[in-house]
Length: 154
Image 1: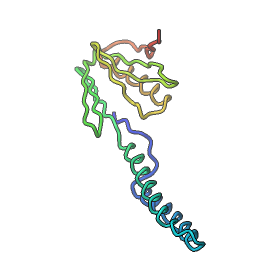
Image 2: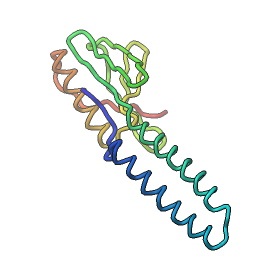
Image 3: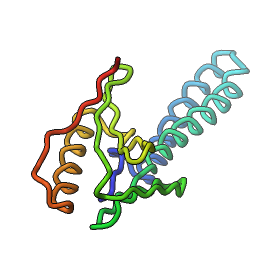
Image 4: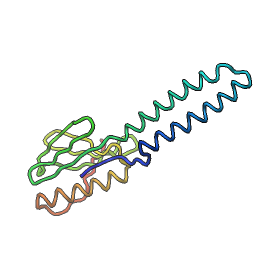
């Protein structure tokens, strides 16, 4: 199972967006320079570089993904691009939804280890993922379906 954040803008679309924004800023700076503000083009170049950098960083954050592999023996979560990998025994792993700071955290827990998955997903998507994981784990372990476990703050 591959978990990826929703991204509607392609790399090509990002380049086009940056080019349009730079063109608009430079046209406005040219107008300002024509009216006597000689520093407008310099500030426009600095602003264009900063906006392009910020948009690129935000776009690259969408490259995050998680690969969840489940078999009869183990459940493995590999985070990309960081290459972090964690493996749990599929029989002992528990899926938990924990409220935290106005959102729900989706945790996999086993033998005192916890891993939060789907950080980049919306709350509703995390709830659906938790239900799907619970069903898949129950099928692999031959157990009846259970409701999603909720951890309460005390």
